[in-house]
Structures are given as C-alpha cells and as structure tokens.
Length: 75
Image (cartoon, one colour):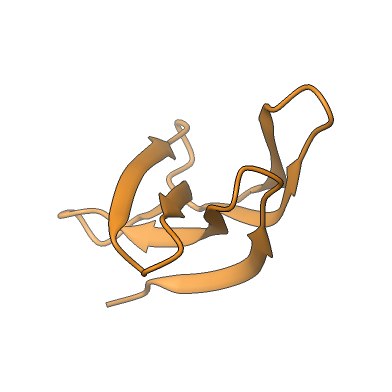
C-alpha cells in the first residue's frame, strides 16, 4: 500500500500519536491521524479525504489544551 507515517509524537497524556497517509480502496491517499497507547495498542484513528484524493498529514502536535492538532497538504 501507500501508507506512510510522517510524524510521531508522545503526548502529555502518555499516548502516542501518528500523522501520515493511508491508501483507500480506490488507491487514493487519505490524511490520517491515529493514536496508540504506550504499549502500542490501537486507540483510535481519524481520516480525512478531499475531492482531490491525494491528502497527507505531515505534522501532529499535542496541545496544552489536551487536543490533537495535525497539519498537512492536499494534493
């Protein structure tokens, strides 16, 4: 597949956050952010896809407000 991790951080909540891209069933790229616990167990994933189908997350950050922020590019 075309899955790629672009950024990995350790959050203040003791969880791991990954930003990158994942391939859809149509072969397009989706902007992806996922979370793992400290043992590497999957917690959750969030995906975004635009009309261009070539989205990539590049950076992820854990905010002082306990929210996750991600940035990337479209096509």
